[in-house]
Length: 108
Length: 114
Image (tube, rainbow over all chains, first blue to last red; front, side, top):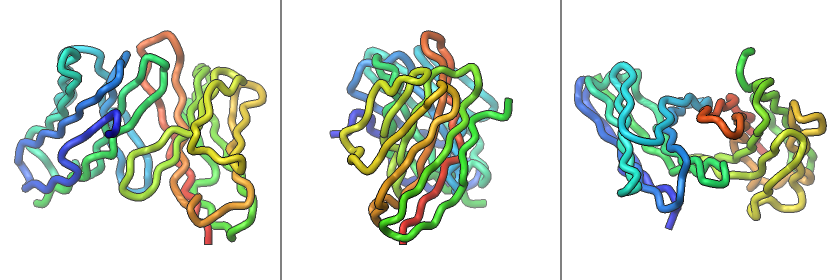
């Protein structure tokens, strides 16, 4: 079993839909990251969370430390949101452990 | 500062050849990480440095892989006698210890072994 699990693995949506991607982890962490990766490989950091909730534009990230679970929400999805979204946890030994990613495709 | 820079962006090599990749982190960042990512998978940890010291090396790394960060600034990752299974995206990331600072990733080096 992977230390960081994401679901779903693949997600398709129509433009405008509300999207949720889930992440569960089994190790002690100091922070959790949500990352976005476009074709070509570049990774962009969206959020770093250690508690509660953060919002940036149409993106919202939440974390429940007790349940070891985080969610990334995208409101009013748009085709340009199409990418791979990766959950990664910063372990207590300061190492990033990645989930396998969720491939999102948003169709017009 | 232009972020984390990786060179080259793409490398095609013949099986058995040696390759070397370079990563230039953000100058104030003392931690530098190397990851490998194959198609459809999340990045896998390879090794990391704090300043010039290599603190951990993954068991995934065979003896053909070596990494250095000689002056605590840029880092190189060398693969000797490349194999087709080494084909992957090699990612570098940097951060600062002790602070709630996120990681900054480079654009990666895509290696294709033919």
